[in-house]
Length: 341
Image (spheres, one colour):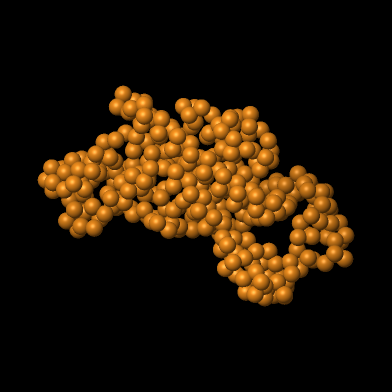
């Protein structure tokens, strides 16, 4: 019990019982117990909150396509024939989940992959089935702005999912998580914030609430494919629809950034992760940090204060040694199978 580190869900103090529940009982045995909310759940909440800024019709299109084709064996078989005719990959249409927001990336990519085949199929379905649902889907598939929303999500969601996969990796990466979080958040901010506002090394000092820090609507980056769709169909897109697209995607960025800054950069986890960077062999080779004590004091249940001097002496001997060059393995996190296939 003395070496326990606890992990709980997003509302840890409520669900574990800060006053009389499991958390309180564990802290009787180990007062230095650290309780951190479920990171993957927090990331999903960030994505969910941001997606709420986009028009409902984007998710509804993905859901309606799945319902129309996959809920009927006859239509599914017919769609496979259209895939073969258009030489599209024989992939199933995926279903967007209400609870697994991070699976949305695979749903979006699948719809974009099948877009030409879907247009051809629903053109036929609208004529032969004469169903209003098929005609409504076809109308959305012919709308370039809707396709731009899908392409925008296909661009930005991988950045969110990468962070999620970093936390789910089975290899040891805890000493790199702070850098991973900072890089992900800064990458998202760079899409819509002025460059001079991002120069601060302390991301918590960046004010995402101030619109004067944002790029102009037309200069905000929404992905290369999104830009190419607009250039191809610019004459078919009204100024009103384009402005709404610009505003909605900006609101997505702002909501996502606010949530990530709140849930990660302002959390105890992020504040303490920099101490674990001392465990990175590449940092050890560079002789940093000079002392391991800032990390040791966070774990009084593992090492007593009386052992600090011996611990730091050994640490300083390690960083003073001539160590052989490191062979750095791939930094790609292992996929834990969270995404849909």
